[in-house]
Structures are given as C-alpha cells and as structure tokens.
Length: 76
Image (cartoon, rainbow, N blue to C red):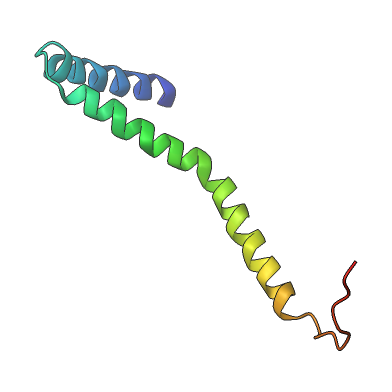
C-alpha cells in the first residue's frame, strides 16, 4: 500500500514537471541536469576525498612524532 502511494505521488510529480518544464519548452531542465550532475559527482567523490584527508592527517601526525636523528645525513 505504501509503495503504491509512493508510485502515485512520483507519477504526479513527474507529470507536473513534464507540463511545467518539458511541454513549455523551458530551458530549466538543462540547469536541473547540470546541477544534479554536479551534486551527484560530488557525493560520489566525497568518500575518496575524506579518505585522502584522513590519510594526510595521519601522515602528518606520524611525521611530527618521529624522534630527531642525531646522525649526520649520509651521502650514498
């Protein structure tokens, strides 16, 4: 019953969108596609970016915690 009601609401919304934007030859659907694509790509890339930031933070913490070496640098 809930799924049937959700389908009915979605169909009404799509029909309304079709009448308001598609049938009226409006240019707004292009904006909807562009901004929707940007938001989607941001959400897809977000986990990768968060892992990258955490890795940088982790590397910086370990870099700051290494004891200083008293040995002079060697030329190999």
